[in-house]
Length: 438
Ligand SMILES: Nc1ncnc2c1ncn2[C@@H]1O[C@H](COP(=O)(O)OP(=O)(O)OP(=O)(O)O)[C@@H](O)[C@H]1O
Ligand SMILES: [Mg+2]
Image (cartoon, rainbow, N blue to C red):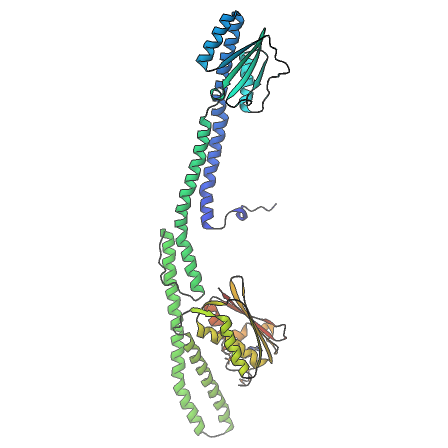
């Protein structure tokens, strides 16, 4: 049978650490308790039972040897006082229907053994019938000797103290370990949270490493890594901006020179290529401008979509919007708006009907943009995210721009820790599904 102990272990570090600490302790204590119970407690109880049975046996024997009432009175009184027993003589009585109480408990068992060995008379045993005493009735030749033994004389109360001490010490250890472990786990949780936030493009400005050395090392490494990633992104953006900016001037010059060359067929091709390049450079610059310094702030995605849809409707497009609930999350609003706008613009460009839904699903906000256009074949759905990739290679401005729209959209959404997937739409065209972690 496939049984995995892992499934039954607690999942959190805190739970595991506590388990690792507590389980061996409890096992050790149980073993100790068992050994104590089995050995010490049984031995002590046996000796106590033997002592009481011996005392009673002595009284019974002396009474048999000196049967006159005065001696009997004397022996029961003396033994009663010295041994804290209570004797009552019922003259002429007979133990009817009274069988030796064959109890199941350890005390009954040991007491029965002791009485059988040391009293050697018929008796009746009642261990639990009285609140504080054990009742032992013994058949004598001319009556019944009723003996009351305080239960204290047969029990070691130490047992309870021992068990109490065991449980108590476990609880104290558990409490101390819990507090201590909480403090050990907190810096790890904090590091995990900081890493998660950074993955979602949000900042944790006051994150500082603390806690155990290993945790501090991981946290310090994370901070350095975070800086490196930031620097890397900044460098990428600056370089793109620089190249695009520097290409603009020669391109403008080339355009002018081409204009002066007239309308020869060979020049027409060149002209169109230069125009393309100019458009690409402009797109790059637009992309880079969006990247900039924007900081995340709480933004209502529903409202943002509403603005985009209103603008699209104003231009005469048919767009349905269904955004429900509170969809506020920390976002870089301009970048996100651009990203959503790129997707909606694509849909509007290729289709007549566009339907947008937005809702909270579990720990993410999901935005779905459906259209009834031609869609994108499954094998091209990864390629369209590449820069300048277009399904219609004619660079016809009517059916598309330069091919950066989806690239930018995915870049922005990934920067927020989210994802974009393309799929078939129930409307017949393309479905773009954006997931943003809350
Ligand atoms: N909703 C859609 N329906 C059909 N094809 C689409 C859709 N969205 C994108 N595509 C295809 O994917 C290609 C890439 O889209 P992308 O948005 O990256 O570039 P673009 O729209 O051509 O140019 P840009 O957005 O930069 O102006 C498009 O050229 C188009 O062929
Ligand atoms: Mg586009």
